[in-house]
Image (cartoon, rainbow, N blue to C red; front, side, top):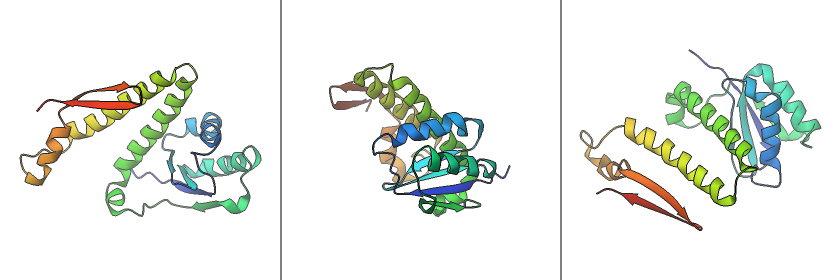
Length: 173
């Protein structure tokens, strides 16, 4: 299936500043949760939102009216074709993953108000562990390509615990 997405680049809108991440969540609630392919990326001082073309006007309108983004800050590219060759080669597969990661981040944000900082960090690290584990478990092994041998140890991660601000990884050797 060919998935065509439009890319919205929002200049000067970092998701790490102020309430911008929560503002993205509001856009998710109002528009993007009904888009089966949308996803976003933090890119420092700008943010990328990719979504179905039918949602671009509504997302742009919310950015402008509700979140103070000026029209000149929004650059729309249709269709999105990734600029990284590996992603471009597997763009459909990455689109599934990017969407899932974006939805997962919205769900993690939903839960934060009900959790202590320790629970938020523990939950985040647990999700990180599952994401890495899934890919390493299903990805290539060291059997055929010897340069993968160092990655084999990563496949053996069995536990990650947060102690204060420190994360300790335990592996089976």
